[in-house]
Picture 1 (tube, chains in turn orange, red):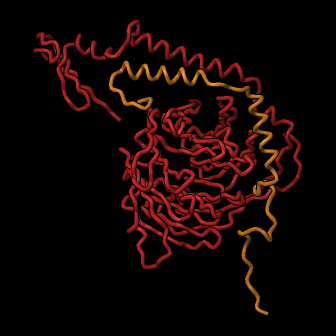
Picture 2 (tube, rainbow over the protein chains, first blue to last red):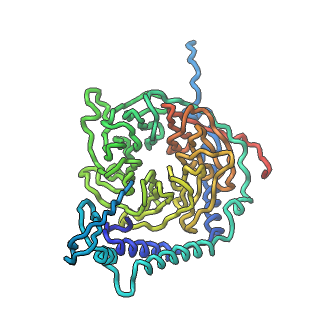
Picture 3 (cartoon, rainbow over the protein chains, first blue to last red):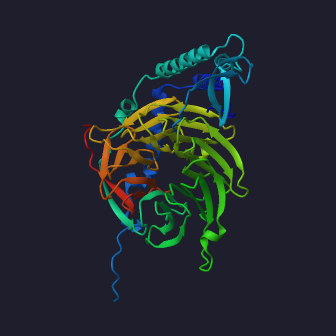
Length: 72
Length: 406
């Protein structure tokens, strides 16, 4: 089952598979070095905005353990 | 599933050519037909054009697959972790469970965060869907679905509704109401209808459209208001287990993963598969886009997680260890994309350095398989759901000690 139409003949299915492969083989690709550099760049640029990386000060942490209240 | 073809030789007039010959009793869909072997051959080659035979199409298919691999290999000039060598190593990462959400009576199968960064919807094998406040651990809503094994649930972008589905093959949307007198199940809207179980669902950018994945091998886009099918996505050769929408800036695509070991990237408007990746050795249980939208990660029953770059059109990293032998059920990135959190069937959560390919931390705590895991929308914590009936909200902190590259 490939493509948008559901064909019942084996020939049509085989042709659809070939069309799909032709499409996938023909796309534009960049080098892994370029792609990897982009991934690294994104991580570095956003590193400061990542609370799981930088940590969150306890005062701002919504999950901090609740301390019992003392009524003075 | 199993197709059994019984071949019985009987002699008689062929339904097509009329000649009395040995007949092949075959079925087209469910109708039995009796054709002679010559007519069966001719039927199989119907639709072929001149100079085309099934064999030539198969050969072309093989050579195209090889060409695809060659083109990809040409651009494989370096590994991601080599490029990441110059990036400073992460220090030690200490994680702690901050909240434990108890209330489900059976295995938690799926969860999703609300955009308000504090509410969570979760679904379970016992048919219950619960909405929690993660800060206080209070249950705000609960509804019992008519089916068990609610394998998929999602929060609407507005925070006013949740969608869920499972063994009943359909996806239903429940508006969330704070009116104590209203029964949540009363306003339920049935949106999607597949021919097999619903494995994943997600709202698109609005409350108006839902994307679903199903055991019937297809994904589909639905209009919530009318329940109309807007687009269907055919291409997987087996059950589709997961999907994830591209971050809104990068356009109308989504990625799906299935039991056919393939991850496929789709154009939502045309229904066309744009790219496909087949490097996993077993079912892909979870797929998640990298925050920039240029890549996605996958978690599989082959005990590995992998990173695929869409512009390089190939796998660029594998996150695995010999000591990890159980499947990864669920993956998600931290906000910057530097960390990959993965929940496994051995009850643990491993945290990977996406760039360097190394494991940064391991979190214990669940008493059964981790089935679902999502980082909160503001990136301050992540929630994991497990077969041990609980959900845990955990956060971590990097102990900033610079460790030399080991």
